[in-house]
Image (cartoon, rainbow, N blue to C red; front, side, top):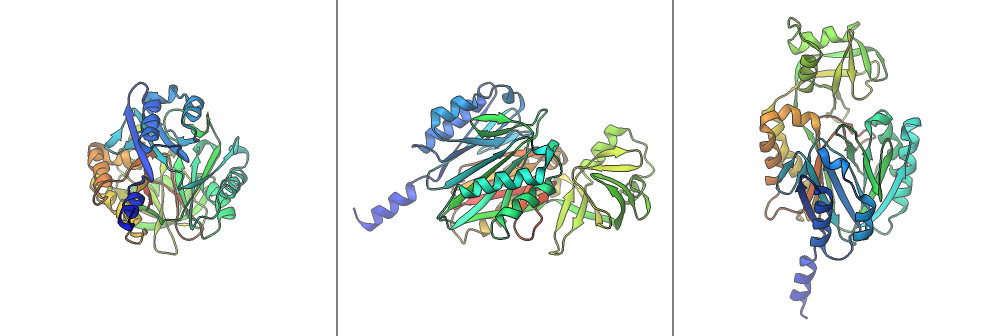
Length: 389
């Protein structure tokens, strides 16, 4: 065989294969299609079920059948190679050219930072000899603040290893870990590859109003901004102070008007507002006292516009090599903000890959993880894209 034929053979070897299905039996169908299309025994299969599919998860049987651990989380909808899936499952099988390490911590609510540190330590110990590594975290928001999970993982991974992932969605969120579905735990998956791994995170929130300082907060509650009730300041700066609204109306307003914490690198960490309690704001993640916050607005147009940007930035990290696989973590808040433009947003993600689209799978999450530089990486209202060359 000549060198050209050898090169063709190497290039034709698939790194990954994707599967997606809707309705009854979608989980087994998506996982089975991804594994069968790949050929051979995968090193890992990522699965992201959503909707009623959560009640029919033969995880152990599927793991045994395909000989690879199945990992992932439930979502508020799945993302497959052909678009969004409201009630179904997307899956991505990776070949054994990608080494994996899997770490699981249960009952993470007792100490989320320590639980994530332990899971990350086990996962990273499972790979060796790879030039590029990324650590994926699959979380459950009911265990605590995602910032603590990032801190725990960072304590093991350090500044050289990027972090990505998200938290489960749906009515009863769960995580897939090897051969079982668990709740309120941490699943850490380390991926090692000799080829480049790209990571990006973008959001579509634009600043409005005048920034404020958090003058009193406790946990995920912001009680005061600029020494005044936080709710009053929020409504004034977003232009809704004169409008009466019930809790449902306020939640809808909050979805499109999250807060943002400015970072030293001139980026922002978006902070999702879950609701109100008295004159306080209930946030998805902790915002400490003395932190600066920016008021923002997120429009369907901005969500759609940033979809392709997220893919392009992830691909830019691959040193001009084409993406051969991708994972997508899109915020359920962005999904709601996009509303009737959701199909345009997902099509923007899929269409941003040049040439033949790589196998990919993803979901809509309840909080995202993306640590590219610095020690912080807990995100809200973000689109996170992982691309493997």
